[in-house]
Image (cartoon, rainbow, N blue to C red; front, side, top):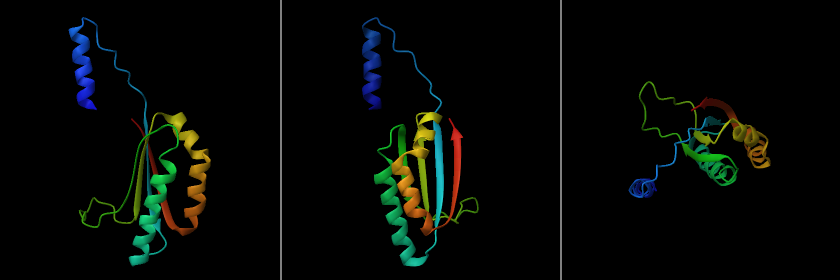
Length: 129
């Protein structure tokens, strides 16, 4: 995709037209760390099920630019690596309005309702970009 954009910009310059002006948007990054009630093998199965539900149910919500959900990788054991969570969700939204709409979207609410009883903890970090 990047190569295509560069080729189009190059073609535009050859045609004597200026490339389009770059538009900078105020995106929002939403990070959620989930800690599950269950540990051990059952906890891993639960973590994989949560990852699946996050990817399948949340990704189609409008305003999401990027969504990543994955389980904590125990190979990362540096002191600065957090170890007290099981699943991490990272979503980039087009803007704060998209984030706010996501919070009340029925698909998001369904995931929250289904998984909250199975969680020991949840931490949310939001940052503007």
